[in-house]
Length: 430
Image 1 (cartoon, rainbow, N blue to C red):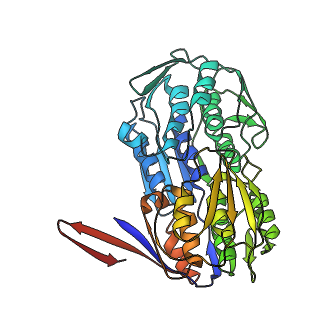
Image 2 (cartoon, one colour):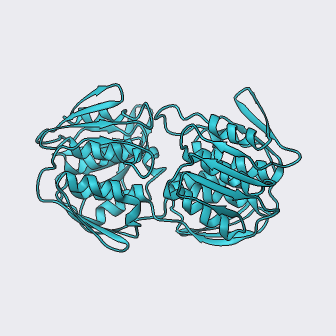
């Protein structure tokens, strides 16, 4: 078992470089199933979720060559095999291979996906899109099978909710469908635009990505391409929040500031200084944060993936803040862990009422999911004493060497491997 040990109180200063976006890299990797030619990717983060997606594609016959920050994928010998339950249960994004599989091979059989337990994330919108394009679906014994022996057909699809995953799956499926497809109430996230940019390089005809209506004209085949994954706006927001909570002065590099408009606005509202450059943002603070209210929304609203991190920051605010979570119904699991550190938080349905306190205290805490883990690290940076964050496997799914990057900014944080033996235990720092 690995844990992160944090000695709180250090003021973060310096520069940190953001890695490629996990949530952009995963659909981009899945899209390589659409062509038999090689796709070269750079800016790929070294994360457990990326390794899982690559293993999933290798099981389908894709040749995957991994290097530092890059991937070379060739699906020339890929086939429509049944996806491994052991792999799919680890990561919800694994379902993103369903659209490309169905479009290129006319068949996919997938286990129901897993991932962080942050609430219900039904795949009904994915299935609705596949059905609208002519696929025949069946669900049995925890598996979903989709068949389109004559190929997919273009369709007009309205999403009841702007689901990112469903939009991505439908976009990929539609690239090889016969005729035109229109996606209404589509997700507008930057990761959608990044996927559309790669698909266009591969020969797809996609317009409107980044708006609520995306139009795709199907083509007979796609070709290989080179592509650089966009920077991770959630990782950037995490380091921006860490600077604010430690009264630090940090420049976050390799970002697209436009992707962080809502985050920048909230940091300024709570009193932090924010200077925006072409591809970097400086965040600095010298005072206790002011209380602010936050409501998570689909992009371009405040991202749900930064809700937990901002909650940690607002635990030290000068008054009471209210955080309303509208995206996932079970994304307050970090509240109990923050309470262990002295935070005063009450849950009322989908709202968390955060009463600001003077200090947090270090404590052993459990990373219940990816972003909860990031929030506990942020809280530990500002807490008095030592904080030990366990269950780092969740954190490693979304942050590329987070302890190294924080240490470069002056944080006192180490990763510790704990080896347990019958009747005894040993620990070593790494």
